[in-house]
Image (cartoon, rainbow, N blue to C red; front, side, top):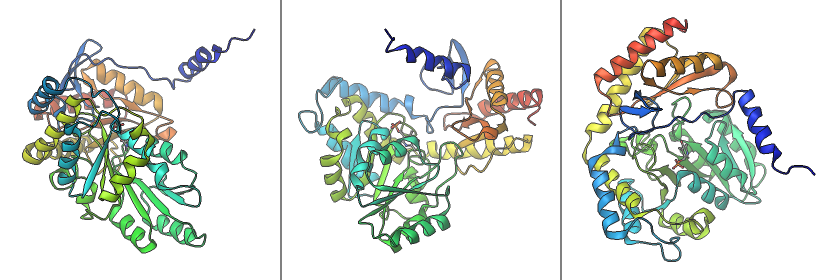
Length: 394
Ligand SMILES: *Cc1c(COP(=O)(O)O)cnc(C)c1O
C-alpha cells in the first residue's frame, strides 16, 4: 500500500536540502526596538511596524476598552450577526482619513486582494499587472477568468504599449494593478503616470499600498497623496498590519465600489469580522497617525540617516525611495552568513534570497522604524561595518 502522506516529509526534506525552507525565529517580546528573539536581546530591524505603533499606549488602551465593552470576538461574519457598530465606525473614520467616499475592511490585506480582484475582472476582461507585484495580488489575479498581461517593473512606457495592444482586442473592461511601494526593493510605482494612462484608455486602477500606508504622503495617506492623485485611483487597497501596527486589510474608494465589494467578495462574506479589540486599535491608529506627526517625521529622519551612513560605508543599498533598506551582497550564502553574524552581534535583519529576489541579488533587508533612536542606529551601523569588513562585502 502506498503511503498517501509520504510527500509531506519528502517535499519538506527537499526544501531543507536546497536551503529553501523557512527557519522561524521566535519573538518573545513586543515588536520594539529592543526585542527578545530566540532568547536573545536584539535590535529589531526587520519589522513592518514603521511607526512603532504595535506598542503605542493609545492603541493598547483602545483595544482593552473594546474587549471590556464588546468581548474578544464578533461571533459571526459581517453579513449575518458580526456587523458591530465599531466596524462601521472604523470604516467611516478610515474613509475620512483617506479622503474617500467610503471604505470596507477585510480580515487581512491578503484576503482583500484575494476576494476583490477576481470580482473586478472576468471572462472577456483584461488584468494588467506590474511584473513584481505582491503574491497576494498574483493569487487574486489567478482566481479571475480574465486575460492577463504583465508590464515591465515600474515602466509606464511599457504599460502604455500593453494598453495600446489591448485596445485592438475590444475587451469589456481593463484593470491595471500595482503595488504602491515594492517590498523587496523599496521603490515606488509611477502611480501618477499609471493613473493618467488609465484615464486615457478608460481602464480601472487598483493600487495595493501596504507599504505606503502611514509612510508616504501627507499624514501618511499613502502613495496617492505622495503623487497628488487622491480620488483618481479606483481601488485604494491597504492594510492595518504594517505602519498602523495592528491587523486587517481594507479598500477605499467610491460608495459604489464598497457596495459592490462587500456583496461580491467571498473572502469578506465567508470570513468572520475583525475581533473588537482589533477594530478599536485600528481606529486609534488612524487617530495617532493624524494627530502625532512626530512618528512619521522620525521614520523619515531615521531613514535618511541610516541610508546615508550605509552608503558612506560602501554598501550597495539599491534604488529604494522608502524606509525599506536593502543591503545587497549578491550570493545567497553570503546574505545568510551576514544575517547570522549580525544576529550574534545583537542586530536582527533577515536575509532575502532566491526565489524572492534574483539569484545574484541576495540581500539583507533592514526596515527603518520611527521608534529607533540615534544610538540604536549607530549601534546597528557599527555592526554592519564590522561584519561587512569581516565578510568582505565592503
Ligand atoms: C503585506 C502585504 C499584503 C498583505 O497584508 P496583510 O494585511 O498582512 O495580509 C498585501 N500586499 C502587499 C503589497 C503587502 O506588502
